[in-house]
Image (tube, rainbow, N blue to C red; front, side, top):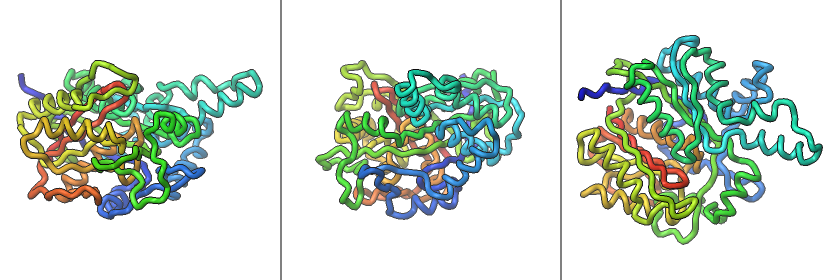
Length: 380
C-alpha cells in the first residue's frame, strides 16, 4: 500500500533556550546548561524575554487573564509555528496539544483556596481541565478543525504526532497542528518527583542533570517549563523542514506504576517498528529520551544496543534544559531538525563518542510512566 508522506512545515517552541530559532541554535551549540535554583532546588525556567512575551499575551485579551501558563505557552509556540508554515488563522486545520500535568499552578491555587474557604472559585473547573489547552489554542488561531487534548505522561507530545498523522493519512484533514506543553515548576509537582527519589539533589556540580551518563550513582532528573508546536501536512511540501519517515510505538506490561524493564522492551519494539516502516536498518543520530535517572537511562541504552549492530550517535537535551514532561518529545524533534539543517550534531559534554560523517536520518525517542514508548524517524 502506498504510504502518504507527511511533511513537517512549521515548528516553534518556548523553553529555557528561548523562543526563536537563532537563540535556540546558539544555545545548542554551546556547552552550557540552562538550570537555576528555586528554593534550593534545580529547575529550568523560561528566560526573561520569553516570560515578557507570556506576560504580554496574558494581558492582550481579558479572556486570557485566568488561563494557566501551560495554555499560554502553547498559544505562543502555536502562533509562531503556523506563521512559519504559512498557515492562515481561520483555516481548517486540526489541533492536538497534549500535556502530562496540565494546569498545575492554577489547579494548586484553586485547591488551596477551596481548602481555605470551603468554596470553589467560579472558573476553577473550565480553566483546569485538560481539554482547556487545545480548545484555547484553537480559539486563538480561529481554526474550524478538530481539537484534541490528551495526556500520556512523558510521551504525550509524540503521541500527539501519531494522532495527527492518522488524521492526515485518513484524509479527514490536510493539516494538523500538534504539540505538547508543560508548566510544572510548582511546589506539589516538584515534590511528587522528589517523592519518587528521581529528582536531582546536588546543587554543587558542573552539570546537574547527567542524562546519558551511565556511570552516575544518583538520579538527576530536573523539571523544565516549555511548549513546542509542530505543523504537519500531507504530501511532499516544498517548504518542508523535514519528512517523517517512520513511526513506532509500544507499551510494556506494567510491573509497577512507573515500570520500565531493564532491557527497555517497549523501546526495542517502538524503534524496530519505526525502522521497519522507514525501510532502513539504522539511523545517523538518536535523540534519546534519557531523563537523567539511573534506571531509565540504562534501560533505553540497553534497548538501543540490542536494536542496532553499530551504535548511532546519541544525544539529548535534558542535560541542558531538563525534562518538560509532556512537551519534551517535540522539543527533541526541534533539536533533530536543527541538526539536519545545520549538518552538525549537538554534543553531550560528558558523553564521548565518534561524530557521524553526515546526518540524513534521525530517530527521536520518548517514553512515559507505564512504559508508553514512541519512536519517530525524520529525514531531510
